[in-house]
Length: 180
Image (cartoon, rainbow, N blue to C red; front, side, top):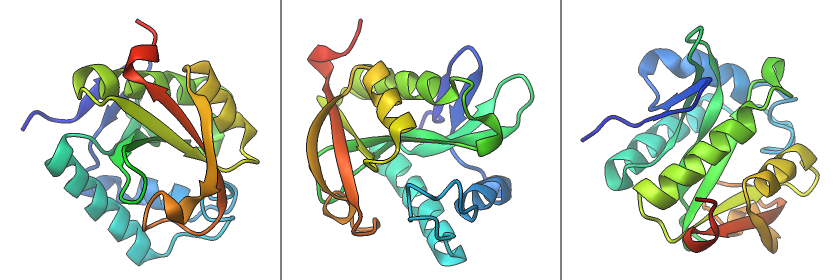
């Protein structure tokens, strides 16, 4: 299998390595980072382990996952970005988190556009979704910047079994509507 590797001018998005767990755990246990994902609750260790196992399974099953977002210049992990299959909403979810020390630098938009292009052009998906908390205006802005449009309002647990029952908006882009 070809390694999962998506490059942008400033970022490398790659599969997670065991030594990356502390960087992910730092994000997943930070209340400010988890504000729109778990309502601010820290992700417990078993859920972090579940994330890593689920992403490896997605990578093996479909060649896509939520990977480590790495600064190319320094090698620092500054977030996660990728696409993963949803088990309750047909299709794949495009997602991104950026460590709070790196907010407002355009990394989320850069990563999301690269993942969108990879998912629709390389992986050949017909469409991709982004499941976003309605109060997360920054992520809603990223979705709009990369051409996604609001398609539904639901709860997160109706999109994926591993998600909590919180209100979310679903943004979608079809391959035919993606920028060239």
